[in-house]
Length: 129
Image 1 (cartoon, rainbow, N blue to C red):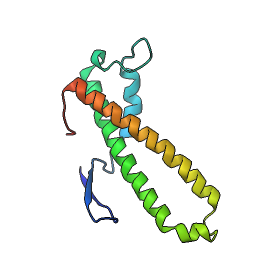
Image 2: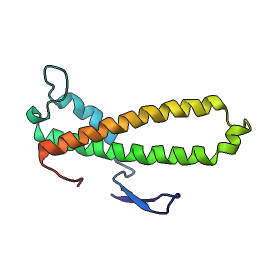
Image 3: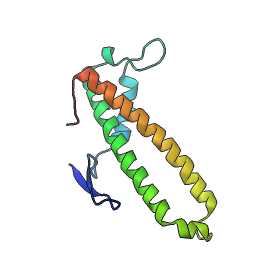
Image 4: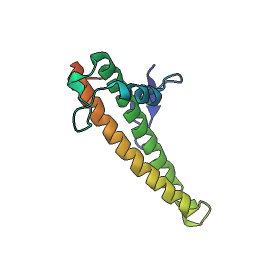
C-alpha cells in the first residue's frame, strides 16, 4: 500500500511503501543470512538466489525511504523546538543523543540505498515495484 505523506516545509508530497503490516527491517534481517558472501565477507549478489536478492533489495529500499522521511521529520521537530532547547525546557543531553541517533540512521540509510542499488543491478530492476 502506498501512503502519501505531506512535507510541511514546501507542501510537496513524497511516496513511501510502508504500511501498517509491512516489516521491511525484520524481513531484511532474516534475508541477510541467506545471501552469499565472497572471500572478503561482502555480499556476492551475483551468486545469491535471485528471489532473495530481489526481496532484500525491496526491503532495503523501503527501509531507506522510511529512514529518510523519519530523519526529515526529526529535523523539522528539532528546528521548531529551538526555543524550548534554548530555555532549557528540553534537556541538551536529549538533543545530543538525537544528534548521534540521526548520524547513525543517516549512515544506515546510505548503506541501505547502496544495497538496494546492488540488488536492482542483480535482478535487472530499474525502479521499485
